[in-house]
Amino acid sequence: MEDKDLMEKELLIIKGVCDLYLHGTIESSTAEVHEAFKCALNESLNIQNKIYSLMAEKGWYQMETVEQQKIDAAKQKFATQ
Image 1 (cartoon, helix red, strand yellow):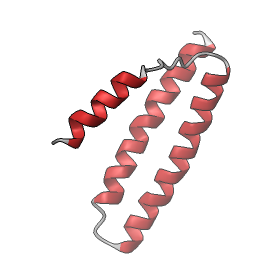
Image 2 (tube, helix red, strand yellow; image 1 turned 90 degrees about the vertical axis):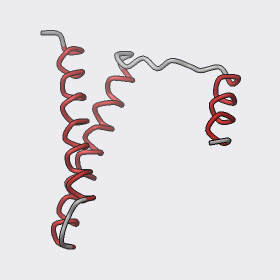
Image 3 (cartoon, helix red, strand yellow; image 1 turned 60 degrees about the vertical axis):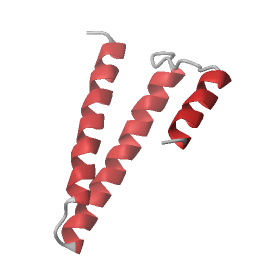
Image 4 (tube, helix red, strand yellow; image 1 turned 135 degrees about the vertical axis):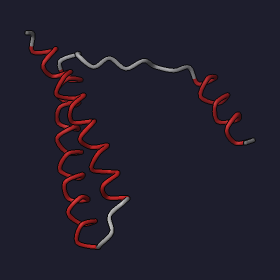
């Protein structure tokens, strides 16, 4: 398996972990549980950022640039709702 493929899989997994910890944080019934989930979420977000940064550095995470006109149209659409 290629390094790029492994990194993509790691990124998908850590995004899922972040999602679980976010929901755990939101739904916590006590301050202690909330803090535990919040700390785990922050650590996971740091890992996600490191993986993303490495992939972007290697050119493995391509981002699409969007025309300003499309951005303005989206802003206008949601501002009226």
